[in-house]
Image 1 (cartoon, rainbow, N blue to C red):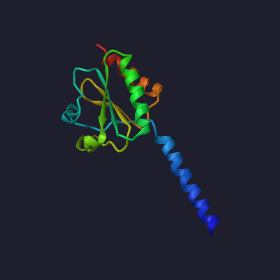
Image 2: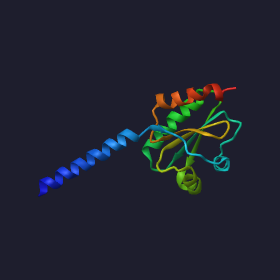
Image 3: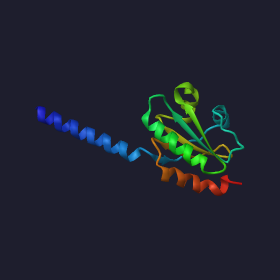
Image 4: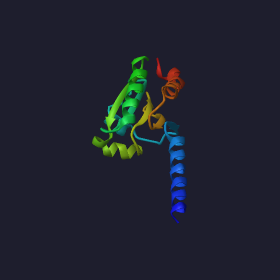
Length: 139
């Protein structure tokens, strides 16, 4: 009986691990949102692209996301990085459908969420997302 329980536990753990590996750091289609929610968080329409990062205090992947977003924004004209403490902005977090930290939203100049990324982004993936919007973003 103990062996069966151990096998079931291993199968469940492996399934959860594979699921998390598949969805972590993957870009998803954006959810519709309203401009006031983004404006409340500091996103301005004058900025061609904004990397809006939701973080929490004790989140280790948030530090990785912060570094990648800051490096990417610092190396390109017209790209800003805003980091928001998810715990301090619960109404906005709920309105934007943020379920985990870090979550990075790539917001264009019109206030539209062009990309949504849950989990720590890869430098190449986030750079590709920004580059795909660069003709629209950089005046």
